[in-house]
Image (cartoon, rainbow over all chains, first blue to last red; front, side, top):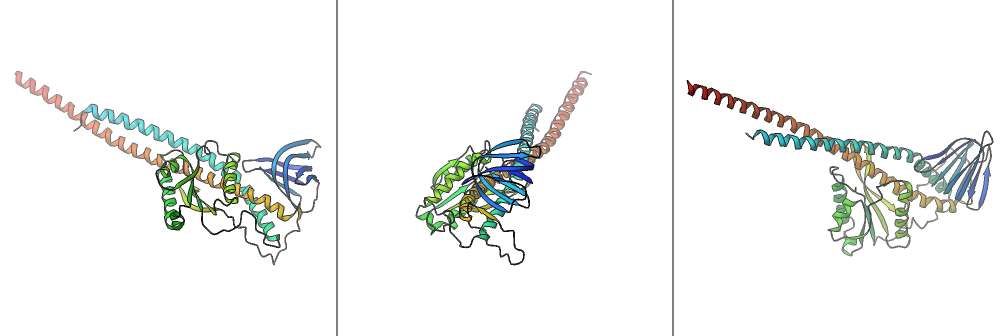
Length: 78
Length: 293
C-alpha cells in the first residue's frame, strides 16, 4: 500500500509500505494492506513504518488526521 | 545649461540608485520564488483537509454546532489587516489600510461608535499607521514574516481562536492581499471566525465509500476545525507574503526602468554641455589668435 505523510510545509514521507503504526487518540493502532476505508484522528506520538524490505522507520507527529482509501494511506500531520 | 560637474554628479547618483533598485528587484524575485514554492507545497494539504471536512460534514447526521461556528450577535469585531514590514512595494500597504478603514467606517460603523472595533495588526506598516488612528489596537505581530512557516503561525492562530472562544470577539475578519501572480494581487476581506462548515453535498447519484470513523465523527471534526483554522491563517499570511514580494518586484522593476530612462537623458545633457564648452574654448582660442595678428 502507498503511504504519504504530509505537513503544510513539506512532505515527510511518500512511498510503498507494508505496515504503518499510528498514535490514535485512544491508543496505537496498525494498518496493513487492504484496510477498509477509514478516517481517524491522531494524537501526539510516533509513527512506525515497515517498508518493503522489512526496514523500520520512525517519525514524530504532533497530532493529525488519517485517511485510508483504496490502499492509499494519507496522514495529514503538523 | 547646467555645468558639467553638476551633470556628472547627478549621473552618478542616478546610477547608484538604479543599482540599488535593480538589486532589490532581484532579491524580491528570489524571495517570491521561495514564497511561491511554499504555497505550492501547502496546496495538497489544504485541498485534502477541505475534502475530509466536507466528507465528515456530509456524513454528520445532526448539524452539531462546534464552538468555532457559533454565530453570535455582532457586537465586538476584530479586524486583522495584513501588511508588510518594509515599504517600497507600491500601493501594497496603502491598499490594505484603505480597505480596512473603509470596512470599519461603512460595515461596522455602529460597532465603531460603541468602541467595539479592535485591530490586530500584522506587519509593521499597518501598525505604524493605525497607531496614529483612534481605533484600539488589541495586539500586533511583526516578527511572523521573518521566518514564515506553519509552526510560527500556529501561536498566532491559537491566540485568535481563543479570543473568539471566550467571546471577547464575535467576528474576526482578515484584510489581506491574495496572490494571483507575480504581477497582480487581489485585495480580499475574509472571515476567519465564526467558520462556515462546508455545505452538505447531496450525494444522490454516487454513494461514496463507507468510512470507519475512529473514534467518532464529532471528535474528528473537533480536531479538524482548529487545524483548518490554523491552515487558513497560514494560507492568508503566505498569500500576503508572496504578494508583497510580487508587488515589490514590480515596483522596483519600474523604478529601474525610470532610472535608465533618466540616465539616458542626463548623458545627452552631459554630452551637449561638454560639446558646448569645447566649442566655447575653440572660439576663445581663435579670438585670441585673431587679436594677435
